[in-house]
Amino acid sequence: MEEASQGALEFDTSVPNIARMYDYWLGGKDNFAADREAADRQARAIPQLPWLARQNRGFLQRAVRPRGSHAIPGHRLRAAHQSERA
Image 1 (cartoon, rainbow, N blue to C red):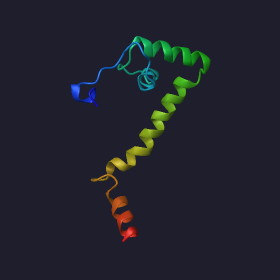
Image 2: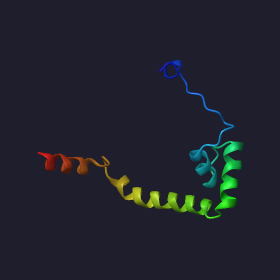
Image 3: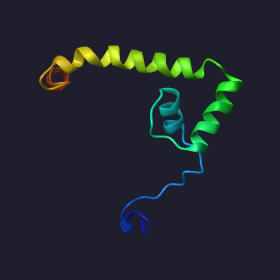
């Protein structure tokens, strides 16, 4: 608990992180050398990984876009769930 009370969390940019590797495969800018090196190693072992990351992002965009047109996302679902419990 002491660490959490010290303020900002620190992280080691020399240790690869899967979220930053995913960012790299998507062409993002929020990754570091260790992430890019690990992502490249993984892509050499499984060449489809960058393609799969892009396909996954595309699916998420298509799945979420219709929900974005609702004023309060998930509101109806919560109301329906509450009425079922009553």
